[in-house]
Amino acid sequence: MSICHLNGTESLAGILESDERDRPGIILIGSSSCPPYVNLQPRIQALAQSMPQFVFYDFTVDHREPSDRKQKLARIIMDWQINPLLSQVLLPSSGKPQTISTNNIERIKKELHRLY
Image (tube, rainbow, N blue to C red; front, side, top):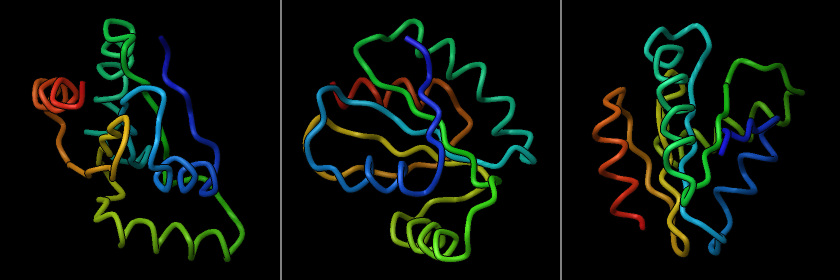
């Protein structure tokens, strides 16, 4: 499996607000100007290839959006306690997602296994 890149705040909000998912997954969120985020991306890509039972998403906060969507993104970041430089949102098959912020791939693997 490959990583599905989320384009825009509406895509991110749709996934976060869903209570039911076909498969558990994770959203990698960060800024392309943050070295830990950039360094984690290929490791997450490799993880996506080795763990097809999960859905992997990627969202960068750098893209330009109209001001109303920027406000919505700021609200999402605050409500979900997302570090915009580097965070992951764990997506269980059912229920509320959980946010973590780490660049430790072993911790990410452990958290994914807890979802399955």
